[in-house]
Image (cartoon, rainbow, N blue to C red; front, side, top):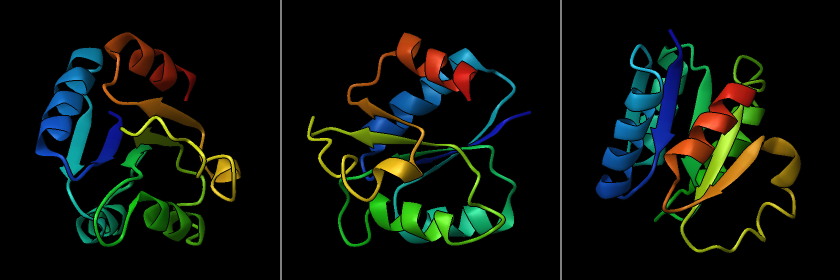
Length: 120
Protein backbone atom coordinates (compact mmCIF):
# COMPACT_ATOMS: atom_id res chain seq x y z
CA UNK A 1 0.00 0.00 0.00
CA UNK A 2 1.47 3.34 -1.06
CA UNK A 3 1.56 6.16 1.45
CA UNK A 4 1.18 9.55 -0.19
CA UNK A 5 1.58 12.92 1.50
CA UNK A 6 -0.27 15.85 -0.08
CA UNK A 7 0.56 19.37 1.12
CA UNK A 8 -1.60 22.27 -0.11
CA UNK A 9 -3.08 25.25 1.72
CA UNK A 10 -6.25 25.06 -0.39
CA UNK A 11 -8.91 22.73 1.04
CA UNK A 12 -10.48 22.54 -2.43
CA UNK A 13 -7.19 21.37 -3.95
CA UNK A 14 -6.70 18.83 -1.15
CA UNK A 15 -10.19 17.41 -1.68
CA UNK A 16 -9.65 17.26 -5.45
CA UNK A 17 -6.26 15.53 -5.17
CA UNK A 18 -7.50 13.10 -2.52
CA UNK A 19 -10.39 12.11 -4.78
CA UNK A 20 -8.16 11.68 -7.83
CA UNK A 21 -5.56 9.69 -5.91
CA UNK A 22 -8.25 7.36 -4.50
CA UNK A 23 -9.57 6.80 -8.05
CA UNK A 24 -6.05 5.99 -9.25
CA UNK A 25 -5.13 3.73 -6.30
CA UNK A 26 -8.01 2.84 -3.98
CA UNK A 27 -5.62 1.08 -1.59
CA UNK A 28 -3.32 4.05 -1.07
CA UNK A 29 -3.09 5.76 2.31
CA UNK A 30 -3.33 9.47 1.60
CA UNK A 31 -2.33 12.10 4.15
CA UNK A 32 -3.76 15.51 3.20
CA UNK A 33 -2.38 18.43 5.18
CA UNK A 34 -2.57 22.19 4.76
CA UNK A 35 0.59 23.45 6.44
CA UNK A 36 4.31 22.81 6.81
CA UNK A 37 4.20 21.70 10.45
CA UNK A 38 1.54 19.03 9.83
CA UNK A 39 3.44 17.79 6.76
CA UNK A 40 6.68 17.57 8.74
CA UNK A 41 4.90 15.64 11.51
CA UNK A 42 3.44 13.14 9.01
CA UNK A 43 6.86 12.67 7.40
CA UNK A 44 8.50 12.05 10.77
CA UNK A 45 5.92 9.51 11.95
CA UNK A 46 5.21 7.58 8.73
CA UNK A 47 7.13 5.92 5.95
CA UNK A 48 5.93 8.08 3.06
CA UNK A 49 6.37 6.76 -0.50
CA UNK A 50 5.54 9.93 -2.47
CA UNK A 51 5.14 13.60 -1.53
CA UNK A 52 2.96 15.97 -3.54
CA UNK A 53 3.81 19.50 -2.44
CA UNK A 54 2.34 22.91 -3.29
CA UNK A 55 4.99 25.61 -3.60
CA UNK A 56 2.89 28.73 -3.04
CA UNK A 57 1.77 28.75 0.58
CA UNK A 58 1.67 31.27 3.42
CA UNK A 59 4.38 31.19 6.08
CA UNK A 60 6.62 28.18 5.43
CA UNK A 61 6.03 27.02 1.88
CA UNK A 62 6.52 23.85 -0.12
CA UNK A 63 10.10 24.79 -0.97
CA UNK A 64 10.91 24.84 2.75
CA UNK A 65 9.50 21.32 3.13
CA UNK A 66 11.46 20.04 0.14
CA UNK A 67 14.72 21.42 1.53
CA UNK A 68 13.90 19.87 4.92
CA UNK A 69 13.16 16.46 3.35
CA UNK A 70 16.40 16.43 1.37
CA UNK A 71 18.34 17.19 4.55
CA UNK A 72 17.02 14.13 6.42
CA UNK A 73 18.60 10.84 5.36
CA UNK A 74 15.41 8.83 5.94
CA UNK A 75 13.48 11.19 3.63
CA UNK A 76 16.01 12.25 1.02
CA UNK A 77 14.94 9.59 -1.50
CA UNK A 78 11.18 10.17 -1.28
CA UNK A 79 9.98 11.15 -4.77
CA UNK A 80 8.50 14.66 -4.87
CA UNK A 81 5.87 16.05 -7.22
CA UNK A 82 5.57 19.84 -6.99
CA UNK A 83 2.24 21.59 -7.49
CA UNK A 84 1.90 25.19 -8.54
CA UNK A 85 -1.18 27.16 -9.39
CA UNK A 86 0.67 30.12 -10.78
CA UNK A 87 2.10 28.50 -13.89
CA UNK A 88 5.40 30.03 -12.80
CA UNK A 89 7.91 27.23 -12.44
CA UNK A 90 10.93 29.52 -12.08
CA UNK A 91 11.64 28.14 -8.59
CA UNK A 92 12.11 24.72 -10.11
CA UNK A 93 14.59 26.03 -12.60
CA UNK A 94 16.83 27.21 -9.78
CA UNK A 95 17.97 25.40 -6.67
CA UNK A 96 14.86 23.21 -6.34
CA UNK A 97 15.11 21.58 -9.75
CA UNK A 98 17.52 18.78 -8.75
CA UNK A 99 15.44 18.02 -5.65
CA UNK A 100 12.11 17.24 -7.33
CA UNK A 101 11.01 14.47 -9.64
CA UNK A 102 8.12 16.18 -11.44
CA UNK A 103 5.90 19.22 -11.34
CA UNK A 104 2.21 19.72 -12.08
CA UNK A 105 0.26 22.87 -12.77
CA UNK A 106 -3.14 23.22 -11.12
CA UNK A 107 -5.77 22.17 -11.86
CA UNK A 108 -4.30 18.68 -11.93
CA UNK A 109 -5.35 16.28 -14.67
CA UNK A 110 -6.12 12.83 -13.26
CA UNK A 111 -4.57 11.14 -16.30
CA UNK A 112 -1.32 13.13 -15.99
CA UNK A 113 -1.20 12.45 -12.25
CA UNK A 114 -1.68 8.73 -12.90
CA UNK A 115 1.17 8.72 -15.43
CA UNK A 116 3.53 10.44 -13.00
CA UNK A 117 2.65 8.10 -10.15
CA UNK A 118 3.31 5.08 -12.38
CA UNK A 119 6.76 6.47 -13.22
CA UNK A 120 7.68 6.78 -9.55
